[in-house]
Each structure stands twice: as C-alpha cells, then as structure tokens.
Image 1 (tube, rainbow, N blue to C red):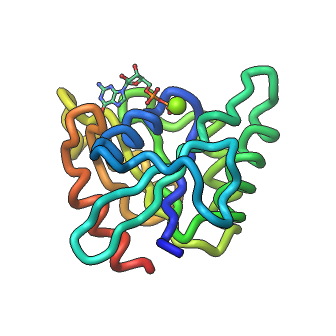
Image 2 (cartoon, rainbow, N blue to C red):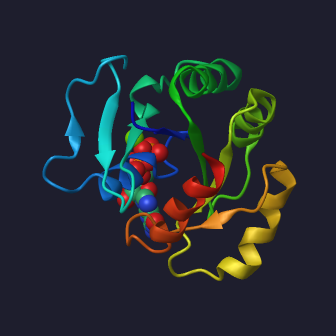
Length: 162
Ligand code: GDP
Ligand code: MG
C-alpha cells in the first residue's frame, strides 16, 4: 500500500486544484485501488523514491450541513485513510470558523498534519503566513496550487513525517 495524503479543508481553498496539479501525469487517476473507498477521487503522485496516493475529499462537501458536521466528515476521512493530512487554508481569506473547527479536530487526530496556506500568488506571503501559526498545527507551508509554486517543497515535507 502506498502512503496516502488526504487533502482536507473547507470548500474553495484549492483542494481540487492541488489534486489536479499533483496528479496531472497520464496514469495518475486511480479508478480502483484495493482497500480504498470508491466515492472519492484518488490519484497517484509521482515522486522520486516513493509514489504516494492523494485523495481529494471535496466530493463530500454539502453546503446544507453546519460547520461542525462538515469538519467532522473531513476529519473522519483523514482518520480512516490518511498517512499524512494536508490541511489547506486560503491565504487571501485568512482563518475563518470552518478552518478553526477543522483544526480543532485535526489536533486531536494524532496523525501528521501539514498546514498548507494556498493562493500566495500575488501577495506577500511573509506577512500573511504569520496569522496561520495560531492554528497550532506547526509551520505553515505557503503554496500557489494553480501555479505549482512551492509544491515540490510541500511534498518534501512528507518524507519527514512518514
Ligand atoms: P476546493 O473547493 O477546495 O476543491 O477548491 P478549488 O480547487 O475548486 O479552487 C477554488 C478556487 O480557487 C478556484 O477558482 C481556483 O481556481 C482558485 N485557486 C486554487 N488555487 C489557487 C491559487 O494557488 N491561487 C489563486 N489565485 N487561486 C487559486
Ligand atoms: Mg474541490
């Protein structure tokens, strides 16, 4: 079984954009993989020494649900399947109540979490990044998923955590 990265975060932070960037190689999309639930999107991430699987949890988003129910579902997926959780937040929006709810649960999870601050293109990431330390999930990693900026460095974090 390959290590599994779960992309977790509220709607619109860029999970699917990062998923697409990570899995854009031809054989990336994983239709069937033993032991994995089918109703989510899985992809294979090509990496030098060791490939990973990445799962986009966006499909379970339901705007009718309250924040707590949403956060709970996200974290349940991470708990069930992930070896590493990429918790994505939006550099432009800052931290909101949904982020706080998800972060609370992730801190109790006991799995490695990387705090990913997306959409740093065109903004001063050094200034913005400081706010996100308050989520108490370690050093935030700034990226721009739509440009692939700093994504290589983000993947490098996995090796420290597995
Ligand atoms: P998801 O709901 O978390 O899957 O978010 P999406 O991947 O669908 O992205 C939500 C919106 O943010 C889309 O309009 C994306 O084009 C945009 N977006 C994603 N990543 C970036 C980024 O790095 N920079 C900017 N400026 N926009 C981004
Ligand atoms: Mg999505």
